Length: 438
Image 1 (cartoon, rainbow, N blue to C red):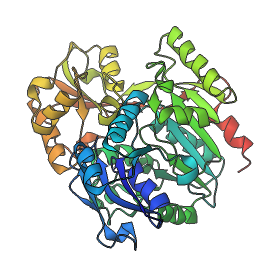
Image 2 (tube, rainbow, N blue to C red):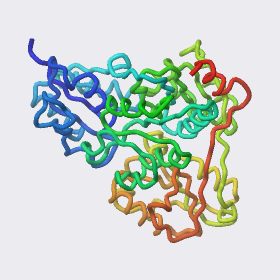
Image 3 (spheres, rainbow, N blue to C red):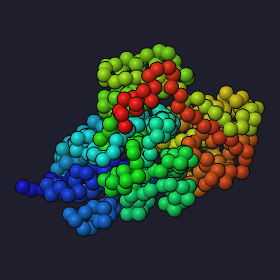
Image 4 (tube, rainbow, N blue to C red):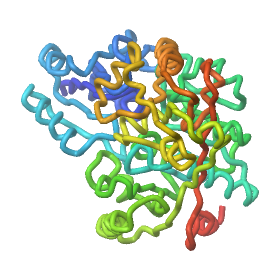
């Protein structure tokens, strides 16, 4: 039978995982290319032969998604597999229409063909959108498991934006490991809070190798999801977060709706700051989509390191990059903290943005008074630093999950904003962990 020629559309994460688990050793298919989007400067590389396997001795080229139609025609492609996350359903079907018009089939691989089974229990934390509160939820779940006497290892959804061979299977135990692996700001934001709590983190490219290493030193694996993607591993318990600040998004984004429908437990976060009518919209959508799921209500209270630095001052607010870009949020915890602490003005950073940061504002034009902490590479980190120091303000409010001052020199007074998950009433996360009899 003639091999089916395939292109995988991705963003250096789910696309590589789909290839590794379904296509790598599958002689019925020939993957002729990956395409890349969302993340800057990840196209123009190759998925290396060392990772691609015996069927691909020369590796697989990675092209910009803008080349998709030409690639379909050039290679007489049979199938295009869509493999990235946090996009509206309408966006996915628009891509399907482009692919169909170019002459190929359009495909989505689901959990059955891509989830790997672990030898130890796996708890998953996922979401319907980026920026709902996965980070503080994973920390909460891990703390509860540790209080139950369990050794927990976190495995994070991939962010392999550098040397893919070097990033095949990464283990992080100290802050020095972040430097050793040349981690981007986005990677540090996800790994550093776990490391600060003494939790080992695994990540990388080959998630079969990763789970086999991680389960050697864990009683329980915590799957720390990225964007709104579904887990790479079969879970014994899946928590899915929804956001009443964006009511309705739980049914309108891919693959977040999958997470909602698969969830054992749905956590409605941010109920302390959301409108009651929006909370009810979300609650009703949960009932319709997944009536068997249990529901936890939670808040993410904000703590400011030094409120006096904000009070009466003209401040620059920096927030988590993906929450603002992929997540389409207009503000985050830093903005709320600045208002509550009595900032005289939140300074618009756009006139001061340079190079890649200026490009970010052009691409995500819903952003205004907030500076996204973009840092997908050394050059972009330098652009971020230059932008911060150019802003005419009295102080800087850091609302990112990591302390940016560890990697960026900021020439103004700074204060950090932190947030943790707080369940409201019953049931709680502990309720469902105890039912597993781990």
